Length: 358
Ligand code: PLP
Ligand code: COI
Image (tube, rainbow, N blue to C red; front, side, top):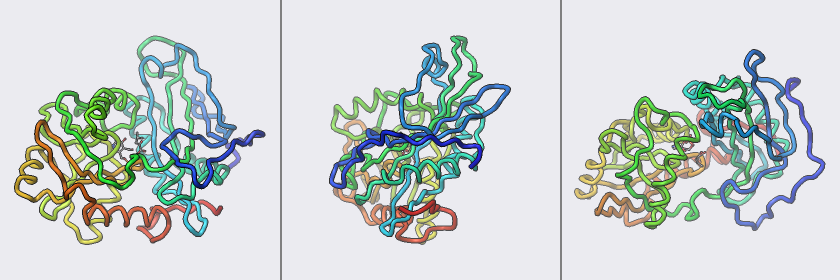
């Protein structure tokens, strides 16, 4: 790519060893991508450079008013040594939808995908080999004008980090316990819930801390107005299997349109399951549980993959789902998705993007 400058590190870092336990997002590779935007000039100076700190003015927009968007995706290493991405253009299209909401200038999706391929191939030796591990990719944009007035910035930084990662939940594929949040809300219609922006996560921290204190992995958010309808979980979309039907909350502007969610709906429909997107009240979930019809519950997300939910707490009511074991549809969903992501099965055209070899 002639509009992408590449500066390789002279000081490669020690990579995690084969047996090392990888957490999530704590180790970073040798390189990162950077690019700037200045109003009147546009995006410019795209480059892959050694990983390192970036310096900001203390008056930088992002530090005060959180003008920021990000994405989360992964590179996978197949057992026969191919390097694969999963639907990368969908992430950059979503990044632009988030950008529009946050008044951040749009990026060129093709350029983002192509430059990402270069970055991943430069650091391909960092893609972990262990089962279930992958190279987590974090593109993000920050508003970076040195000015305290509340308005969109005139200057931005686009950056992409790579992080070899293991399972997002320490429990791996073991079902997680989840708690229905009744006090705090994450998003309202008309807000920023559908965008992937840091503020959504900052405002979720309090609830997550309380959930952890109570022994739960994350919270299940309810709608921000009536606190009646199910939204999503901290870092994943949510699916219920009720009496054999797979149900997930519809996209109402307050939940993130997950790429795993969209992919899973398509795969399950292809496999003959009835999949419905609609409003679902938490009371309906509890009623289904009481009637013995809440067969399974699972979350979907890039980091979380498919995470079965083994216990759902709503007020004093504790619902043990499928005896706390992974259910057949969750197990099937996990296998279908991960087989495509790790190149063991051919998915729909364009989903698994081979970018090179080890
Ligand atoms: N919902 C939230 C709040 C998330 O942070 C994520 C993770 O990206 C998801 C849902 C799942 O989205 P995706 O499947 O695109 O990773
Ligand atoms: C992802 O799944 O990519 C996420 O961004 C979830 C979380 C770590 C914020």
